[in-house]
Image: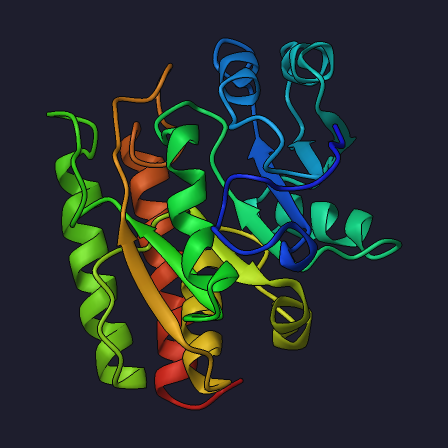
Length: 246
């Protein structure tokens, strides 16, 4: 889906408004993806890209019917899906890339607040933090809360910068994103991005976002095996950076 460009992210003059693209990785989210796309702020985004990451349901069809550009990425993994969307943008790069989940746990109405620090020239990389925002009871499962806190403590030890969340709702300048050369294809994608952003000297900020219970069961924290696999992968990525193997 392409629009005529953003109009709601900043009070800047129309000629100064950046081009913004949104990438939504999605795996078996047919029950939620249509609502996510339809609830996005009108005229804010040039591109709305849903990357169907090997879904076995109608995720792609529903997203396409709602107006999104749908790409298919058969390799399983959050990083694979994000990189597919980034590659699509390379032929006509935007100024800012936003990432959001497709399970409707994020509020699309928070998107202007997430991009605003970049639009206003106050940041290069923004994380929508669920821990400092308002979240519905039970939206973040206990294992997710603990994992987030642990990862943020380690990131601070490794990079010296304090984060409060590994939230998937985030925005970054396209040029900075490409320069990062992200390599993590699975659960450690968000962690790698945060550490590389700090190492690159980017101005990193967090803004509070609202968070609600997702539609359907989480593929990560919704199962014991998913939680273990995600935690192990994130810790492995953190260990690589802690010992300088990057």
